[in-house]
Length: 262
Image 1 (cartoon, rainbow, N blue to C red):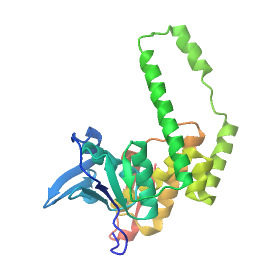
Image 2 (image 1 turned 180 degrees about the vertical axis):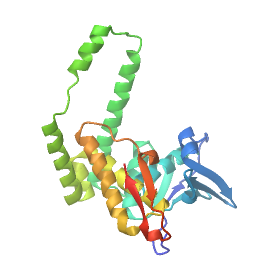
Image 3 (image 1 turned 180 degrees about the horizontal axis):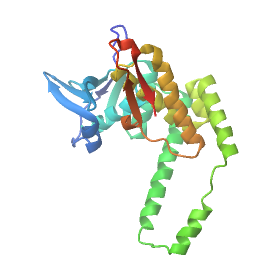
Image 4 (image 1 turned 90 degrees about the vertical axis):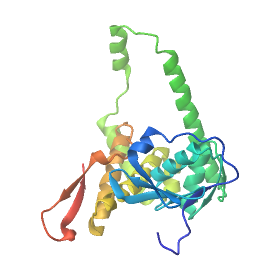
């Protein structure tokens, strides 16, 4: 991290409540080791790359990555933190504030704008809608529809036409490439997920030794693929390194290494 940059950190404000173990997902994604007074969270698939560290009730990130912020806040929650203080650049503090507030945590260190408040309201509404849908699905688990009902339901599911998909894809790509992040998400909230894919793809690319010359192309392929999935009406999966592959030419120079997106 550049010494001139303000530390990207999430710290405990006040006293923590009862802690609980971190999720199995975090255990699988990260290699967690103690080094002196610090706890290092390194990527399981790349143990040499530390994602963030923990020391004296503070979590410090090595880069501004939305997916990483979610993990850090999950760790904070596992430690019983309900009030936190965030430091860092404006984008980092805004992303931490948004994610933390959506989890019901209190945040110091960032003053949200009216646009931030509106975005949070939409996010909370979406979470409530998903929660209600899950409850409805659970209440209907005991209901076993007949085979004819299943066929009718499958036939009634609307599909996205090729023309609609192409128009949607074009609109999303135009917004993503020409508008500021906040404006693009304001117009198309679903693009928020695409902005999570981009830094995750870059972090993975760098961890695998990709060359700077090819980095932008790799990120573009990743985000284009995410937008194509959105346009087709599909859910964008969480960034999964298994969906990427590394191709290394058999040469002695590092400049000839490249990573391709599948």
